[in-house]
Length: 451
Image (cartoon, rainbow, N blue to C red; front, side, top):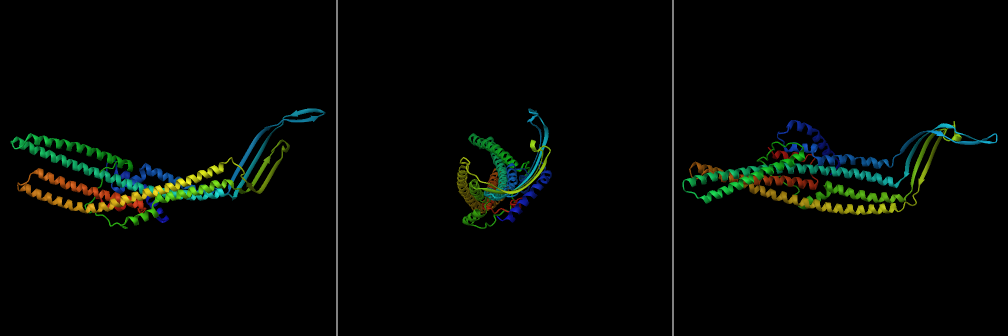
């Protein structure tokens, strides 16, 4: 991902955060929340995203901290002391002791500029790498919150579809029970039919309660992500059709992921940071050369200088040569080497994980696209069956129970079609997130699918 793309994405995120407060005020606690509004609210309220945001703000300072190791360091020191001295001397052949009291003052300003500092150079390079790593992790968190919002939003919609189907099933069994009751009263039915219908009705009631619980759980999950009451959710429009996937093959997507995935980029930078850390620790064996300039002014610095003021200006070079530190430098270098090996292993593990997620998402998108096409035909057939059943009821050939059964069949096909569309959208988001191809505002391109 280029720097321009990163800046554009960060700019979109900041604009979305600024809009978050307006959205919360305008939407209200029980108002409808669109997918776009849910995404912008998550950027403002989601604790996980806010954690990554402040981590990135902290990581930006690593570049400055590293650079500070190579820049001049200026320090000032001022001291004032009250002194009481014991002074012995011979007076007229006899020892005499006095206790003079005086005030001494000292002021020093010192400038230190590194001339040769390999540890400082390594820290400077590490600071730049750490800042870039933090930026990549932040970009990955933007993709992550996008996927989580879309997943939670669509899960809530699917739970509502399940609830509607459970109501249809309960109503169909209730109507069936009424039919069996009338037949039994006319002597045309059996008690066994009534008991069977009652058992199906009881099961449908239990499934309805379970579906209601699932709706509550799904909406609570969505609320936890966006930090507000979702209210009424937008439904998928009937004009939804899968987009043409480009590229098509998994191999092309995997190459994109290896090049552009933010998590892999952050892991590679972690490896580079660990490599630089080895050099930083090895630099503990090398000398350090500093240019030092100092200006000092003293007043009654010692008893012998009592009442005297002195000013001293110095320019010089200071060389610090480490000789022995108890084996600490070698130990920390070995630790850094082990950390470097661990970072390489983490990169390999993260690469495998990303490619597995990419393959799952790619397979889900491809299979969901074919499934959507088949279910669209099933829904059309279900609508024709509903029309034919209504005409048959008017002609006295069918009864209301047949209409309810046809309605249940149609609604089941519609629910399965919606589920396939939900799975397709989630899979598409995960596929693009894994490949690092999500746009600056990834949710906006999905909003036309909703109504």
